[in-house]
Image 1 (cartoon, chains in turn green, red):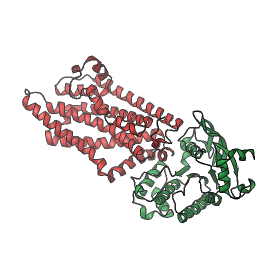
Image 2 (cartoon, one colour; image 1 turned 30 degrees about the vertical axis):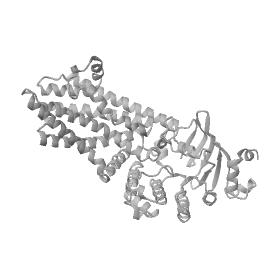
Image 3 (tube, chains in turn cyan, green; image 1 turned 60 degrees about the horizontal axis):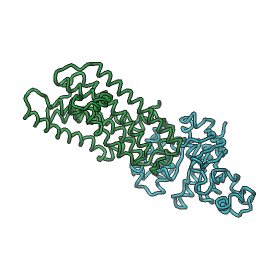
Image 4 (cartoon, chains in turn cyan, brown; image 1 turned 180 degrees about the vertical axis):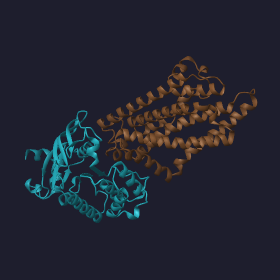
Amino acid sequence: MPNVLSVFALRKRFGEKAAVDGISFEVGHNEIVGLLGPNGAGKTTTINMILGVLEPTAGAIRIEGRDVATQRAQALACTNFTAVYAPLPGNLTVYQNLRVFALIYDVKNSAARIQELLEQFDLVEFRNVKCGLLSSGEQTRAALAKAMLNRPHLLLLDEPTASLDPSKARDIRAQIRELARRDGIGVLWTSHNMVEVQEVCDWVLFLSRGAILLEGDPKTLPREHGKSSLEDLFVSVAREPLTLEAG
Amino acid sequence: MRWHPVLAIVLRQFYLMRGSPARLFPLVMWVAVDILLWGFITKYLASIAAPGFNFVSTLLGAVLLWDFFGRVMLGVTTTFFEDVWSRNFLNIFATPLSIAEYVTGLVLTSVITSSLALVMMFVLASAAFGLSFFAYGVMLAPFLLVLFLTGIALGIFGAAIVLRLGPAAEWLIWPIPALVSPFVGVFYPLATLPGWMQTIAYALAPSYVFEGVRAIVAGATFPAIHLLWAASLSALYIVLAVAFFVRVYRRAVRTGLLARYSAETVS
């Protein structure tokens, strides 16, 4: 079985500037990979290319062996995402949004699937509430419900818990981890919360200036680079990437 | 093409209209206002002009056909604007939905809303001023078809312009029907226009429809070749508009405009 996500020598240039500079990585089934890095490192650009809304300058992206450039619909049929900058339309209710996206993803038996997700993400009482009227945490849960609609094999989560209180964030992390294990989902997870990353990710990639500077197990990586915590390592990547490159 | 994603675009618009009378209101209101305004103008003109000229079928009928054209165009652009207004591009385009399915969804939505508007026109205009579109005979169907195809093409073109130039460009799109109307001779024969305007008029499919309306009401014949030419022109507009939309979309994907669209960046 091919990896759920394979990225080869991916590059994106905007004029003279390389936003992503030849990165390669893989995400396996039942694996959560953290994509970390300071603002502007190229995380969102990478996610946008995987989602097919941004064309790479060079390189290839394969989702379960299907090339996003040439087999876009098949590749994206088993993919989904949430991002804080892509909320669900606020002028539709939670149910209406899920119904529309269930049709787009051609979800079978969508009524039952939507009900299952409403219960799973604690949204039953908000079923008929417009998404624009939800709190940011409730909107995040609604977006996560949308992201799970098509039972994705690849899930892209761009700061999925950024708007959640610590209690809800912990619940959501546990839920996503459980879903990934149960359904064999591959997850690419970006976050600035290093405690969260250490808790959920099996592997992390540190991006800096569009390139992968470091990668490894988040539980052992800080020690390997002489840092006491993942957060210290993150700060070093953000402030002194050249030092780490040399090391 | 898969039909469920196409229906998703239609269903979204249905939910929006059902939940917001402000979206339904214009479908009826502008038609009603035009019928009242032009209905009374035609009544007045009929009272002061020599008997024998049918102002109702010529003027009011033409105005309503033009309203239908505008409604078709706005049916496409408004459905597209809903994605602009709700910053939904990333959610919509990061799915298996193809451009063909998305554009078909826009068109199907417009078919439904403009058909509703057309029925409203039939009912109101005949009840209030005795206008019968059936006065145009069997030619009514091709007239509506040409206006429908041209409206769809202009709607897709307008959506592409907004995708290319950013959300603020929607203000360039709303007045398009008003800008086109002097050239297509809604109210007067094309012969009234100066030469350069006539040249443009003969390249516009709706011009043939309004010439045809006047010919039929006057009891003259309207050459079928003109109708065929108008239908061919409007089909060509659709091909060109879709090609333009696809080109603009691909550029937006290449430059990153689609991914950061809501920032109103024009690159």
